Amino acid sequence: MPEIQTVDPAVSRAKFDRQIGWFQTQAGAYRAQGGFLIEARFPTAFFIFAPPKIRPQIIGAAVEIDFSNYDLRPPSVVFVDPFTRRPVARKDLLLSMLRRPHLPGTPPDMISVLMQQKALSLSDFLQANSAEHTPFLCMAGVREYHDNPAHSGDSWLLHRGSGEGCLAFILDKIIKYGTGPVEQIQYQFQISVGAMVVPPSAIPE
Image (tube, rainbow, N blue to C red; front, side, top):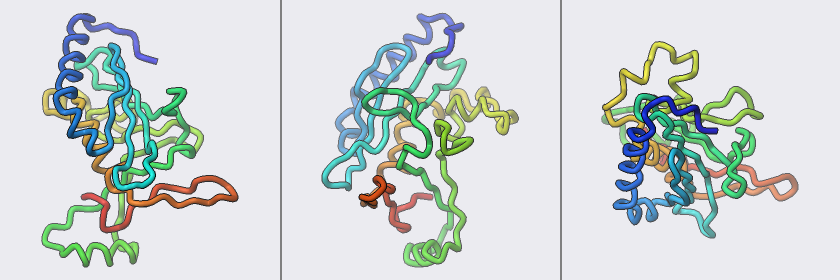
């Protein structure tokens, strides 16, 4: 649910409209990357994401982005069921958002070898308290990150105005680290769909 609006609603609505208006000028570019705006009604925008390399196409993720009190507060990003728009548990979201360490000067072939040998420590931008809890984007610019007690020393006000937390920032991160690198689906027909698979060489830094 959107949080209580304490900022002048006209201010947040104008900033929301500006974000959505910007997206509409870029909608074709995002569609080519699998990002689709389904509905925008202040203060929330509903997006779905399809991994563009997968055939047949599937919905890889869906999010509700809440711009209540924007931009005194950062947007909230909640992963939801694309049909009911209810928050999903981590165990029910096949997506991962893996990031590898920055290794300047290292040949791509060597990086692939290191990853196959599990010699590189990968981080996942998608975090959850447990498999039963709704995952959140663990990155600056997202309300769930800044509201987490573990990040109390990293105030949103330190990032406000930097570009982090804008709609482009959020969408680009979900595509770059989430649905963009996915190249296949692993199926386990006896149980359920297993996971969306990202080859080691496709994991961004």
